[in-house]
Length: 199
Ligand code: 5GP
Image (cartoon, rainbow, N blue to C red; front, side, top):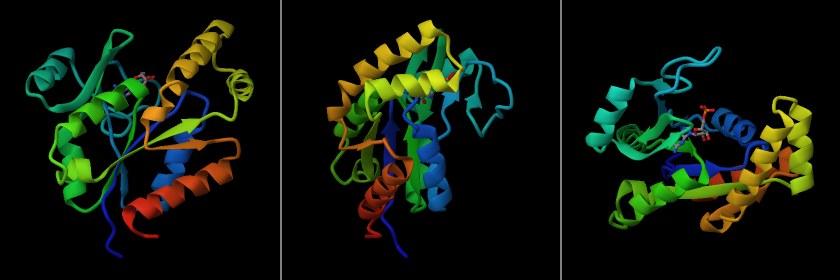
């Protein structure tokens, strides 16, 4: 079936189940590919170059900034992170779709780039963004505490960040609330199906 390529940006405060939803979508749609970000931070644990991130030196990253190779980039906790533009354009040119997992600031930068492009440019024509909301701040706190991976201070910081991010949810074309994973996933699939012309 011929489908319309999708350039999909997904953002959510941590603890909203975004990674789970993205993994499920990647399993469901074989033509959907995950955009691998570049970073200058060192790999952690089992992370692999070219799978989790493209791990680059600071010099190489700065060269790519100078070459305007990034659709967006940012410095987070002293490391550079960025999304290369060319691989996204290649995926779309092949008729496939791509999903980006970036925060609200990154998404805003991508939108600003898109807005400068002609209406029929493949990046603009395929662009679509979704914000995943937690059911409530209480539930988000419970989830973060339940994960047991963050200190109480880190949890407070994540909750404060979440409020800041949720205040910008209105910038997104769609919002999905993840109070029930199966329902949230069904909504995501419906959005993808409508946007790609499957439905
Ligand atoms: P981590 O080092 O834990 O993998 O990621 C740290 C932060 O960098 C996260 O907030 C993550 O969202 C952000 N990040 C990862 N990739 C990108 C990217 O391509 N662009 C931007 N702007 N931020 C990113």
